[in-house]
Image 1 (cartoon, rainbow, N blue to C red):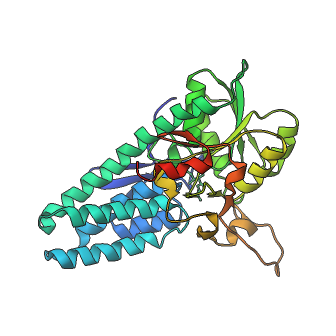
Image 2: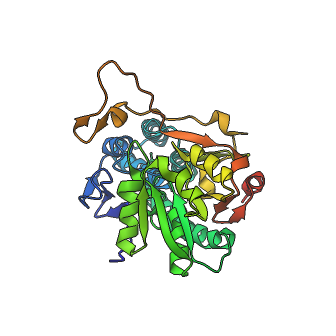
Image 3: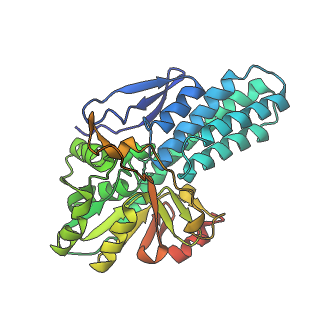
Length: 347
Ligand code: MRU
């Protein structure tokens, strides 16, 4: 099977979200037609991945706009800001969420017409964010090919979490690079970290690969250094949730340790992300807010409690990889050393 995966779709006046909490065992959709349900879907990770939650939030803004009762323009804009606040409160780290909401609010403000005229403009804007993201990911995939190690042999890549079609509007960022390499005949195999605690690698990345016949090997996170030492990995490619202006990169917890072990083994480490993931307001990664999630993600596996009573937990969902561990950041505008991404500010 090679059917494109679209985690967020606008259909029959409502949003269809692939329920990512049920994959890989069930491929089902959740229908969303209220903004409060969209906020819930983002916080419970029915939809997840930085660009995908941006797209979902954009549609959420439109759904919320339709729920506003007033025809007074100023009152409408005020209520839309409140809706934006609800959506902004869902997940703190991925900047694409905030970028998309900002863009939707700007669309509403810039539309000079009545409330009845603003609302359809918001749907157009959300659909634009959706379709732009697919084109952006395809461009990232292409640019990634230029920086992957050149070798007469096919490459083995390692990734962490899921930065695939499921995490974007479609195609993926890190997995976009993997897809392009596969299509061009340059990929032998993808190694996918399982990605504790929520297992996005084991459940989602592996599922996407299987759909397309891309050879994939899932490893426990703790096996990456050993695999590198054995010469199994040619390069690491990961996604990003927020990149500071100096290239420091927040991504799924465990990415930082992967970058460190890649450096120790002289293996190139790449970040693939759209420009909308760069937060130019932050000079470095120290200001990136790190989401902490419920400890049950650690102490419970399926229905089973795996820790004894009396234990304390710490569950940060992301970490920050310093720019000096990153060989290049692959964007839709090309691949750049981290120090040069600041040049994208005015693109
Ligand atoms: O907590 P998640 O599953 O939303 O985290 C996702 C990641 O960390 C991805 O690597 C990142 O959002 C990039 S998605 C193209």
